[in-house]
Length: 105
Length: 191
Image 1 (cartoon, rainbow over the protein chains, first blue to last red):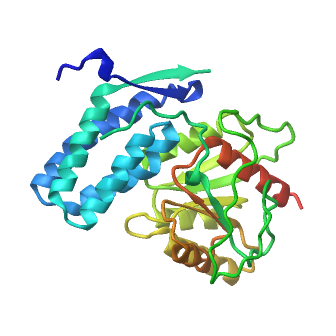
Image 2: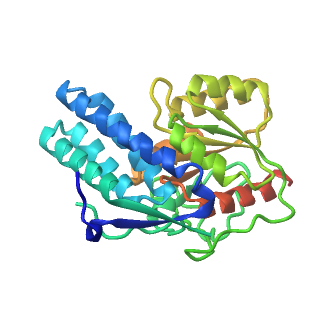
């Protein structure tokens, strides 16, 4: 996926989190795969769990958008709304493609 | 769609609301605790840290080395909380399941428990009830249990307090909010 520079999302994160932020984002990329597979298999329980964790974890790392997507995923899984789940997976993919982290001391 | 540039980690909003039990055995002395005696039928009081957004809390030099048990099933949140207390004297143990937490609690003398309420298998409610039952059975003074949850409705707050938790922090947990609460607990644990 080719992204234009103007589409970059810059997130300012405190320096002390530099060691763990890359792993956090990598785990969200894995979540994309798991969510896609789970949706194909109608495994809403797994989607609900991933959404719940994203909601609870994202903002602590400085990624409020991930918490928002997680909350929407959790709600969509509860409502068994497959379209909304796919929409949030797309939103997560978009965010991960555009995010640039700048650490601040 | 995703919004514009994200905020950093010190934006203190409703995500760090702290609610407290009206019947806490030894109430925490929190920085902005102005209404600590609301009845459970009402919405629990919402307390926010005193420092402004963007300021990194400096750990006080006289902190007691609290022994803390974090009960949390999310590996990412485990890492995050561990990083929050890295530069403090606090000792942090982690249990990723309620049953494991209960066993660790029986074997250690924890000053404070940070309890995720929504976990698979044995959730935070059942774990807290089991801890309280064990304390009563063994005539142990009640440890402070702070519920960590994304729940925000007042009925959820009542359920949390009825399970035996002393206070409630909403996720995502921010560093400044957590350190201020731990500092408040430090003062309490030495009394």
